[in-house]
Image 1 (tube, rainbow, N blue to C red):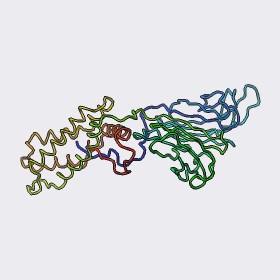
Image 2 (image 1 turned 120 degrees about the horizontal axis):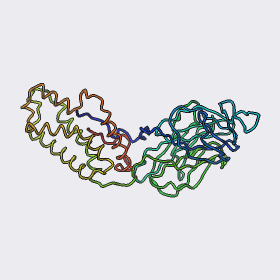
Image 3 (image 1 turned 120 degrees about the vertical axis):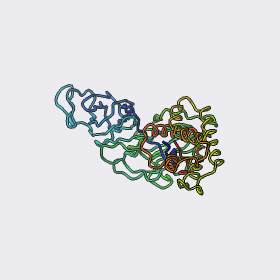
Image 4 (image 1 turned 90 degrees about the vertical axis):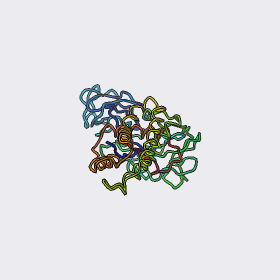
Length: 376
């Protein structure tokens, strides 16, 4: 059945939940000692040096994370790290974190026995753009501002909160002109920067600043993975077809929403119905001819309702007057998406096309809230 579903209701980041049970974690050691990292009783990092970081891949789930002096072994608990020889010592820090499948995370072993975790926004950036994120792990310190080439782009990013949930930091997406002077400060317009560096924030990159202290060695700049979507313009024909579905949705609503079943005065003419069918068929045909291989399955599922609608309208010669009142009402409900049941397969297809459209079809100047809607 046909339902009206938002393709890009806003230009906010796409959620990063995936079917995968794997979780990528960037582990950063700002503890001041060489560390071994344990998760739920298993050693996952060995000998991580001071101010060094490493990427690991783990399974999803809630895990007790314990940072011990390197060389620890045996039974490791939130209260005890066993040295190669006695005595047992207290861990540098420990914490419980929920790792969600498909997420990309940063875990910081901070000074003073504190640990902080963040999820990283890995949704694709739009054509011509980069993303810059700030993870504030100062531990109750002030909100921080981020400036790029003298322009404040993030305001009052607060420190990480306690708890097991890995929440994202503050991020900004903008058109790329490399290189950029990036500053982090707790003053307006970064007038007195705590950190500054000239960074190459190139098109399509996704950069995270982990801010865990004011010394240069306490700040890490990491490049994190994005979802696997080519950040290059695709042929304009498919983008036009994909984004043109917004106009089709408006035409369907305009034509069928005012119709009262059994009332000839409100029934659209055969010419009006045929014009709509021709528009839908032309858009779908163009999309079929130019859809990238990786999007074909999504495109087919998401447009199935439109294909069914045009088939029905064509079958009775575009003349709604030939239908019984009950059949007219059923067609109106189908076309306008009234009381449609959930459809997980369609929702997945729409989400996939949303990610593709944001990465490939929408310009950096697109205004928030003005994105197209999708009829599928």
